[in-house]
Image 1 (cartoon, rainbow, N blue to C red):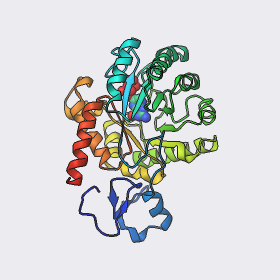
Image 2 (image 1 turned 180 degrees about the horizontal axis):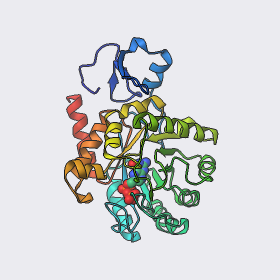
Image 3 (image 1 turned 60 degrees about the horizontal axis):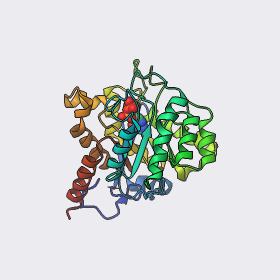
Image 4 (image 1 turned 45 degrees about the vertical axis):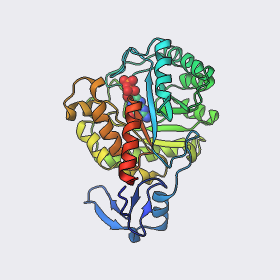
Length: 326
Ligand code: HH2
């Protein structure tokens, strides 16, 4: 909840801007049940309410905006726009105004996308990251890649966060590289590869399957030497998910706070926004993207990954002011 009429005894969600005074208990094969805080163990209450550690140098007590820079010819909404280094730099500088993090990627992971070689992906991303740092940009930069070689080059050029849409599954060297670099890591849920992930994806229970898979990836990351206070998770909207799957996840995003780490939501301009919002053109899905981003903020999502940074900043300022009442 984010209502100012907050009952005594309500607890903060992850030390942030939302609160809760009841929880929904969800289990496989049985109906969910809403219970009061008194029915939780002390450990449960603590895990859900304690402040999250800072991530990539950013405190997690207010929603953070991650601006997307795709240096690709074929990304689903901005493919080709920022492939030239000068265009990429201009867009990065434009976004740096309202963004808390810049997320730079050199390979499209849209449904059906073909793999790009590590050399090509590095050539697209590392020089732009280096030029941004040379120009004095101080914002955290995440490298959006599933390949260890690309990540290594990006860290060398000045990236400070790893964003892996396969949660360290794709490249066996990735976990070791991230542990050694000492960078924070975003573990996103996905299945298979972009080429095949939308071929009839199935889950027993999408919410609990994604939750369990992320719990398993967190354990793998910790075992590889990446400490918990450097990990964040993301349910991976649109990655091996149908419209129904995406909506089931969005309606109960707050479940993911139970994994004890910051949660990122990336829904910007994705296909389900076009379907429900009746907008075939991805670049025209900003209004729907804002609505979904604010729905995520209302469930305590600590990071929101977006294409339209200035518009999201404006929406967030207004969401915050209108829910606070001052
Ligand atoms: N979505 C995309 C890429 N990377 N990373 C995280 N953590 N979460 C996401 O939801 C996510 C992501 C896909 O979107 P985009 O980068 O706009 O497109 P493309 O993959 O076609 O470059």
